[in-house]
Image (cartoon, rainbow, N blue to C red; front, side):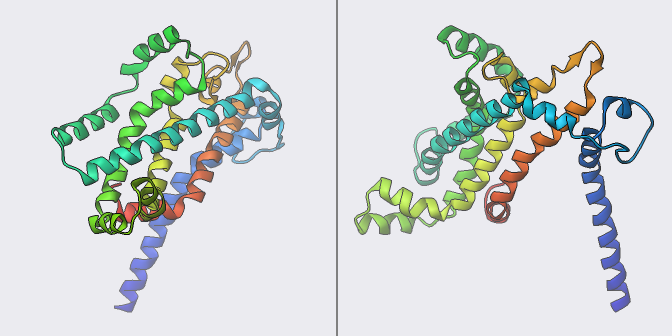
Length: 273
């Protein structure tokens, strides 16, 4: 029995190692390309840079047309995450604690907005923001992404809130807590894991979304994803700079995962994720 268990453990370790290798291979290859010149990338095949260079990263960090793309993306992503969570918290509480006419239909309608492709809303948003002077602004992209992130955040948070006993609300009211004080001081700490999970998914969707962010911006608020699609020159694609931009694009998402990793683990274990 011990030998069988040991062989199963060894087999599971091999499978896990192969799976991790499969996941990390594209990231390694992107890093490998980012440390090469275009001539070396288009030349002979190599598993590592023969003459490593940081010129590609230097280009991104010194050229405003590149590094401002990261700044613009971070601005509207953070704005969207804050707005989405702020709107979703009271909405999720209402769905969790109260029963009203059409509540289930309204909840389903919110989710249908999340199911629709972004291309459906690109033209209406473009015409709306152009007419009211919000085109090419960070708030325009942030508000557009709320159409998808708010329903997702409401759905996640409602699952966490439904797991909190209603007696806690009643006890707080008996103790003299006002609703805002109860919600901030008592209720929100109880669903901190849900807030972390919802914020993570809102951040990730807004960070990687391309169609709306590219359609609703041109210069002042152009995100990094749009910048990366406009790197064709007379000599062709600048593969090294694109690879370096890809590596730098992964970093914010990795940092978010690192800081909310405990909340994400609890959310997958306890919440509606």
